[in-house]
Length: 319
Image (cartoon, rainbow, N blue to C red; front, side, top):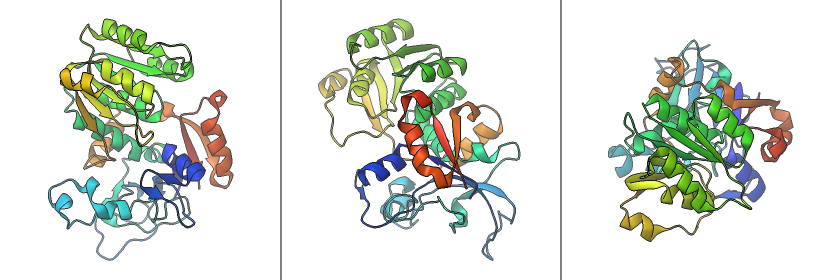
């Protein structure tokens, strides 16, 4: 292992001891966003050799169940049991990991190991864009300018999005989004901002009908409500961020306006596309890496993630 990115999943597991149905009952190694170098291969492995720089899909499906046979391997019950960094499977925050070769990918020569550790969240963003069947010329709303929100925005632009509007509570993240090509941004103050004002501004900027596709990347209830109301009639609203198990949302409004609410679960056949986007330069993830911290100081990394003054996005642990 060389680099391991940490995300909200790792923070939830550390602070709460669970994430949705995944409950820690015994000591667990976390970490699932990695880059590494191959030091040994099995005798039947042909596509990798010692010295190759790689990334990995951390969830390994069984390949035999109905979901796998139908092509929906991200919903395989076995992949939930073998998802690195989620109970009960140890993750990658260690020096060496043995992983099935079919789920390991060689990095393009022009992609650094730091960038390679962002392949997993980038693959999630690609899956989110494909779940919406994103097409050229659409107007996009992204709720949340954290790592996942910015990746969804960058991939949407790479797929030909017309205008992209991004909301967040942090000005520094919105400034970065603008520098990366976001067309419009809106800073939300959770204490004073009225949801209807945000929706009105989105509709004015993206056209009176609102966003063709909206990506909710925070898991926040208020942000989810804004996203649904700001999606045009017949549009699509995707839940990318993970929040509480239950929240209050305007389902009747969404139903009457035929707004499709779409879930996003990890990734499915999107690592090759993500590798192409990164290797071809169509997506630039370098500005998203804000901190690199030695893995022995992981508690400091969590503090940086939670400190608004740190202006962190992707915190990378070095091994």
